[in-house]
Structure formats: C-alpha cells, structure tokens
Amino acid sequence: MCSAAHHHADGRSADALLRTAAQRWGSTTALVDASGGITFASLDQRVDALAAGLRARLPLRGTRVAVWLDKRVDTVALLFAAMRAGLLAVPVNPALRPAQVRATLLDCGAALLCTDSSRLQALTGDTPCAVISIDDDAALASLVDAGRGLPSAPAQRDSDELALLLYTSGSTGQPKGVMVSHANLLAGAQSVAQFQALSQDDRLLVALPLSFDAGFSQITSAWAAGACAVLLEHLFAADIQRAIDQYQITGITAVPPLYLQLLALAASSGSGASLRFFANTGGHLSAEQWQALQARWPRAQPIPMYGLTEAFRASWLPRAHLATSLGAIGIAIPNARLHVLRPDGSACAVGEYGELVQQGPLVTRGYWNDPARSAERFRPGPDGDAAVWSGDTVYADHAGILWFVGRRDEQIKTSGYRVSPTEVEAAAAACGVATCVALGVPDPRLGQAIVLVVERTTDDADSGRSFGPGPDGSGADDASRAAPDEPDPENTRLLAALRRKLSSWQVPQRIIYWPGVLPRNANGKFDRPAIRASLLTSEPTKTS
Image (cartoon, rainbow, N blue to C red):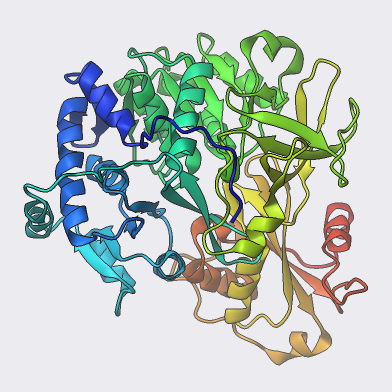
C-alpha cells in the first residue's frame, strides 16, 4: 500500500478532537439528533465507556468495527469509541441494500457489526461477523459492563494508524475501502475549520451520510472549533429547510441535487436567515446555480468546494474570487498541494487540460486490501512524495484558479454518489438482460443521469422475455415510459426488478434499446465513448 508523507500530530488520534473539546467546552452542546442534544463532556464519557467495552471484546488492535445505523448520537459515539479503542471504524451507509452491506462486511473482514433490530432482520441468514443490536438495551449495557475498570485507549497512540474505512464504489463494481488515518482526519478537521472560519457559535447541519467523507468531516471540523453538529435524517428538501430555521443552522454542506430541490421550494417555506455559509460536495454546481442559491440566502457566503474520498478535500473558492470565478473549483485548501499534470507527470501550462494530482497530509493510505488499485491511483507526485491521481481533468487559469472539465474514468457521479457502471450492468444481467451498457450523461438536476443501453437483436424482440414481476400496484412512473401517454410494460418490469436489486441512486433514469449489436473497440470491449456520443446526438430507438 502507498504510504504518504503524513504529519505526526504528537501521537494524537482523531478521537482526541472530542477529548480536547470536552476539556475546553465541556458544557457546550456537541451533537443534536432527533431526540435532543448531548454536551461535549457527556459524549466524551459515553465514548470512553463504549471504547473500554469494545477493547474488552476486541483486544486486537486494528480490528474492524462496522456501524450500520441511521444518524443519531449513538452512531457517532460508536464510531469514535472504535477509534479511541485502537480499532478501525467502518461507517456503513444506512441506505445500502442488505447484499451490499454483506459485501462490505466481507471485504473489510469486520469482526463486529453494530446495527439495530430492523436492519439486522433485513440481513437475513448468517451475518459474516458478530452483531450488537443497539436498540437492545441489555446488549449495549453488556458491552459497557465488559469494559468497566479497563482503559478506554491503548497506551501508545500513533496518528499514522488507520482510523476509518470509507467505502466508495469503484469502476469494477466491487466495494472499495479508502484507508483513512488519524492524521488524515485531524488535518482535514483543522483545514475545514480554517477555511470555513468555524467558531464555537456555529451550528453545522449534517444532512449527508456519515459514510461520506464530507458528512463525517462536518462532525470533526465542527468539534475542532467547538461548534455543534446537528444530525438530520431527511426524506425531502423541505425537511432540510425546516431544520435550518428550527436549529438556527449557520453552515450546510450538501450535494447539488439537494440544493436544486431546495431551490424548487417556495421561498416562503423557510427564511434560512441564520445561514452564514453553504458549501457543495459530491458534484459540480454551475455559476447560475450558485447565483440562485445566493439569491435564496443573500446573507450567506457560497463556499464552492471540490474533493475526492481518497484525499478528503482538495480546493475551495474564497470570497475574493466569487465575483470573477463563480463556477470554478478554486484554489488549494490548507494542508493540500495541487498540481495539474500531463500523463508523463510534467506540469501543464495555463489553460491546458491535465489531471488533478493532490499531495499533502490529506492524502489517504490507499484502498483496503487492494494493492493493485492502490498502486494505480496512489503514486508519487512531482516532488517524489505520495500523491493521489484523481482521474479528473481540470485546467488552471491565469489567476491560478482551477476549473473542472470532467471525469477521466467511466465512473458515474449522480446525486453526489459515485456509481459503478459494472454494478448496474450486473444487476440488469441478473434481471435477464443479456447485453447492456450503463452510462452517465449530463443532467442539470443529478449531475449525471444513469442511462442503461440494452442491446436488442431480432431474437430478443421476438423472445417475449420477462424481467420479473411488475411493480407492486404502483404502475409505470415517468422513468418507465416510452412516450408521454404510452406506458411500456417491458421497461416497467425491468425498472421494478432493478429497484429490488440496487440502491435508489443506482437505478437508471432511462432505458434505451439499441438496434443490433452495441459498438465494440479493437479490444472487444464496449466502445463507451461511441455509445455515449450517439446518445447525446440522436437516440437509436425507443427510450424509457
């Protein structure tokens, strides 16, 4: 695995953020969830008790502890307890399907899963590790009792040790665990707190999953400044708007689709007057979209950001550049060194397209148990230090401001999620589709929309294939219509089957049937650029 030139933060661990905050601001509220708030001092004591229990149960350093729960105080406490105990915390997205959770548990070799009874029931069958059900008071009390009298943390701490595994979808469709060290988390918390100018007066809305680096970092960066993090489980944009006013939120970080949904709400649905800033993650917003948000919250500062899970955050656009460069991804954040490089590693000229390469203490340690993919993405940078090669194409203008051009690889970025085409194609194959290609095409609402292109030969058309049972009485929705007033039963069945196999953000927005054989390149692989180009010019045949 790649090893970066990381700072040793005096042997500190990421959970020291909480310990330090408890010492400085003990009686201040650290976290708020649907049931209320908890102070830094009380949360630190809670983490101590859970960490001692985890150490008693899992004495081997670096053992993986997965947490599959919705956002609440206990979720955060368990993740920080695992880190304090010298274990490796694995936050699992609550929206994942049971099969995806099982794949994650197997990939990281989790020894323990902390979840609730309803999720445990959904897993069905044997879980690949031991389980603690958090809503079983006896089980949680037993864990705490096991640790009574034991120290909560190992005697020797090293900030270069791994703290978190953050799972991100890879281009092969297999789960990919990004190895995040304590030093990475500390540097990230300090960096964000610095460029967002966080203070003890701030209240940050955590609307993103804690399995997202940006979601988790809202907690760590808030605590670095003594600020409060408000955990929100939301179904609709209106929930976010209400929460901003209810909790007097001063800062929010969200994915572009959520901002576009907020813009679609009536202005009277909430004032947002408490907001000091709003920042993006997981996708690009255009200058026009930033301006619309500025008009919605005129007292708040837009903070355009860009980053990738493999290196946390990379860039931001300071206030001084908003008037001239809105729509750009900006300049390097504190603790990041950015380069725009040609394939041979030489520096690009002003205005020349190249790959964004990042160095510094935010660069993570590679992919869990995957030296081949780690070596591909984590390679030395221009000065020989470890770097992450983003796979994203950017250019720098004469002022040194970076502008995003596009993704070099085929990964689809939709609704802030990275989706592997292979995973969508595999699900379609399991639904009876013989040959297909999943692609991302530009979409103003989602960033990219997933389109499934199905190869249709004469035999297919005559075969009367079924894609499984139809939807449960709900009928065809807009995404499964061949024409405005003509529901397509085949598409309806296929989409219904795909929804049972994929997370909501992985389900294609459209299905297109390609007449004849899909184009291949010289290596016999699907010629994705040619297929995409055809979609963007003239669609071959019936679309959903």
